[in-house]
Length: 170
Image (tube, rainbow, N blue to C red; front, side, top):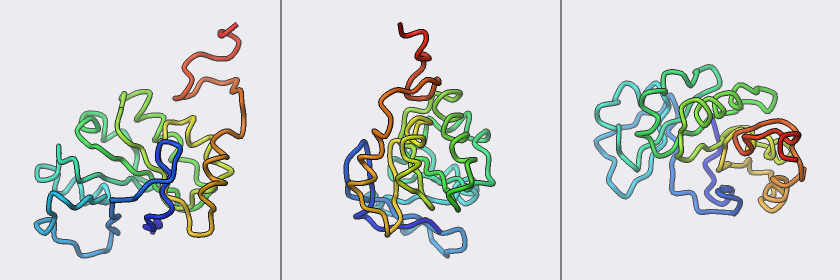
């Protein structure tokens, strides 16, 4: 399950307070107990089960696991303020594609958060795919993670953060 330590959240290139609580897939959780002051990130399957109750609520986000595609979010993502994408292991790259789908194909403007096995050496690439917040592992230094967002000064390929390839920028 993704880390829920508030001290290790990087959002918009700075250490931020994490107001959001991740709800585990197996965790018993009564949605009726959520107040307007609570910020909850539900597993996508649970979010779908209660879609009519939670859609358009600024304090309820959802998280996709690596085996849950982003396509079902096409028509509703604009009504969710935060979408977290879980990386169960650093070598599972499906989350990169999900973020690109949300940003580039669905034009999602909200927060996309990387959760799970989030490592500094991949943060530059998370950012290129559209992530703007990162819930880091306990063993990651936040300052190292922030500096890794600038690991490269030039990107040759098009990304969610750069729509024009370098050769067309001349």
